[in-house]
Image 1 (tube, rainbow, N blue to C red):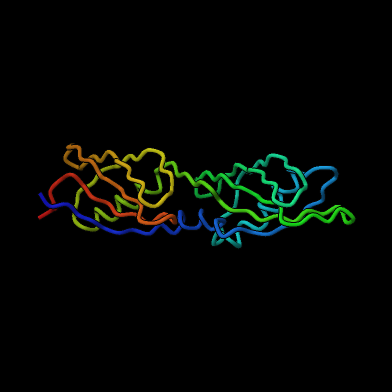
Image 2 (cartoon, rainbow, N blue to C red):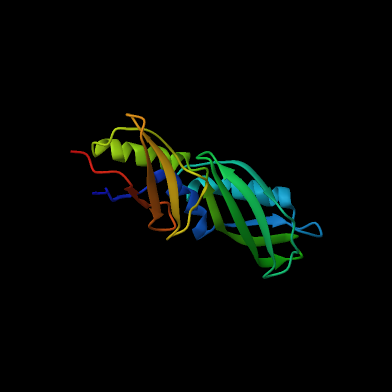
Length: 181
């Protein structure tokens, strides 16, 4: 039995990790870090770091206005990827009532639909007669392995194994069925 192995790179998913490199912003303190202002700053800066993707929702916890203090934000982008973002205070200017911070994505999770769609397109392009594929939620992390259920046009079932090849959403796909003709 021969299995296709195809390395894929998801543009939409890659962009979800764009915030990993971080952004810098500053907000007023007012006695603590204003979580709404932090969320607004991250939301404004995200598209430049994520190839034009936008955050559809973001909520941030509060934090202390002290250098080295951290806070977390939960967000989702318009590619359907859920992000856990960590912010770190890098500078505090009490006279100006200003806090500077950097952020990085510490976890990115996809609902699996984007992966399934890309994998189906690839398999169909290789001659497989795939009707549908269903993948579970996928944590976007190099080395993560996920099994997806595949239904072929003739009604038979197969398993597709997706192995993430990097932390940016690239993956290899291997099917359990024979290679076409």
